[in-house]
Amino acid sequence: MSETITACEAAAYDGGPARGLALALATADAGPPPGGVGALPSGDVPPDAEVVPHRLAALEGVGFVRWPVSGPAPKPTDAPHPWTLAAHLAAARAGVARRLLDDAVAHLSRRSAGGELLSQKQLVRGVVADVHTELEAVLRLLRVAGHLPAAVVDAHDRLTALDWEAAKLLGAAGFLADGPARAGYVAWLIAESWLDRNHTAVKEPAPC
Image 1: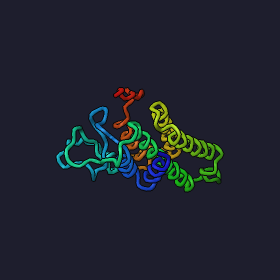
Image 2: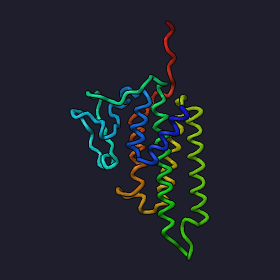
Image 3: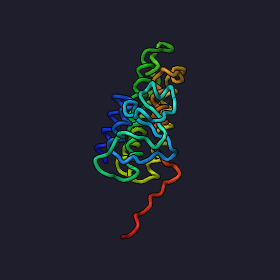
Image 4: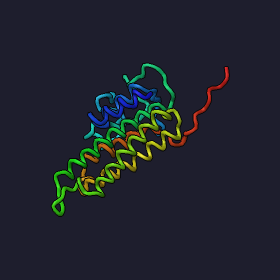
């Protein structure tokens, strides 16, 4: 799982939530979404699927589809642990968060106050360092405990908090629909469509 965690994080960092979602779905056994609506990359939405409109998700190349769907859906090459998809989606969210943080630092590097770049302010540097450290901790958690439902849910909750911390660095730009924080919001929606928070205990298979 460790290599796939790294790959999902990198895919989402480079290509946004849609690319991270595509890789996560291709490397895990999705099954039906727990709430009956699941996120798919826009290019993988079947033509006759019932799509739940969402403007921001569409701008990120993601569609929310009511199940069941017909036509080809992403299929894994094997059948990994049932919580693998949620772990891979968390890794993708980490990639989106890292991109958001880098965008925030670049944004602050173009602004100054009191003759000093905002990106060099002690408080800002502290927040950036904390988010970077926490992102690495989340990825480490996913690599060693991504098969444990409680750990995966914890990772997603921590990523939601980290998205908020990174978005705050953008100031008002962090609330714009066309701003870099949009990807973090859509990545959260993607994860919540597939994450079954009501079933964090994995059932043991019945004895033969």
